[in-house]
Image (cartoon, rainbow, N blue to C red; front, side, top):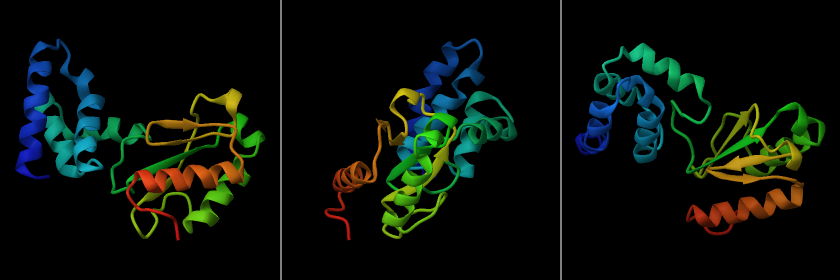
Length: 166
């Protein structure tokens, strides 16, 4: 991590840390801020969070690896979380996942060669009534069909500044 990012994170969080009776409550917020600025949370980000909060790095790492929306390795500019809960599974998640993999040319856990999309499973998006569902960034999409997925991917690719898909 560069010095400017560390300085910005310190400036944003030190007042909150001083005002908080239990600074460890800020672990997720701090990790998300690091991720927002860096794209993911490298080891240096875990160490920075630990230093700022007065924790051991392993305590921060435990939180970082618990949440599937905290990325501990580089990801694409658009992360697609495919819900594989029982509701989504029973309403076609496997077909949607297979379509995503074929369309993107990657499997779960991988990133497209152009760095735009990373495809990840998630256990629940809380959209059971709109199953099958996926989330791209902070946008939730439900009632998915292969055609709808194609339209969403095209929109997300354009939003990522990549123009039309190959």
